[in-house]
Structure formats: C-alpha cells, structure tokens
Length: 141
Image (cartoon, rainbow, N blue to C red; front, top):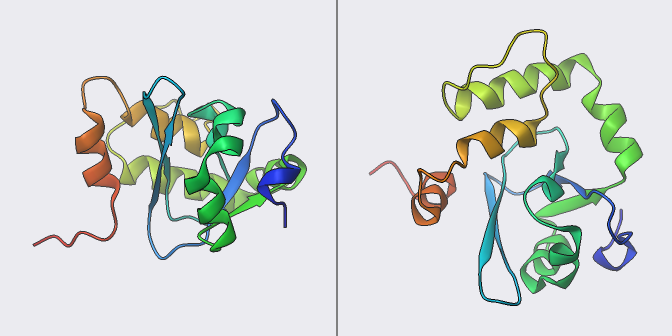
C-alpha cells in the first residue's frame, strides 16, 4: 500500500474505492476555488489526477484522511495499468458508462473510467448538483 507521502511529485495517482459506495472528494486550491473528484464504487483503479493536479492531493487533508481511514487505497501506476488491461476491467468501464448517462463512445475506442466520469462533469451542471448526484449516503426518498 502506498501512502500519500510516498507519492511522486507530478506523477499520476491511481486509487481504488474501498468505501461502501461512490466516494466524492473536494480539493481546494490556494485561491479558494475547488475541484470535485468523484471515485465511483468499482473494482478497477481510477486515475484521480485527471480531475486535479497531483500536488492538490498531496496537500489535501481530506485526501490524507480518506486514505488513512481506508476509504480509498493508493496503488502504483504499474499495477493500475496492468489491471485496466484485463477483460473484466473493460466490462466495468461499460458499466460505468451506463451508470453515468448516455455518453456516446465508439465501441473500438479505449476509454478510461475517469474519462467517462469527466465527461459527465460538464460546466452545464453545477458542482452542488453533481455533489448531490454522486453522494451515496442520500436515499431515493
């Protein structure tokens, strides 16, 4: 298991969601603006640096807390790439596509889970609405 302090500056960060549902992390910049980082409940690794700069994760106390509590696990890039090449991972990407809407990808195009999630995060949907949609602790009622 990799700790936050072991992350290499400027390198991609891959995580696995170990929580009981979708995990949503909000990272803050020095100027007060924020980045919303969704990590869906899935067995495949997610490259979270597609959403925010690697240094934001290293400086985030919320990210450190989530890792220390075991809600998310940091894995090596090599391990993540190996896992994402498996047939099961490709099927899981399709599940994530279906879960997050009618995003049209060519069947022959390789798409990562983070690309799928990034595409649903357009500027047309406010951060507050995306936060509510991604939360797993709110019931349908």
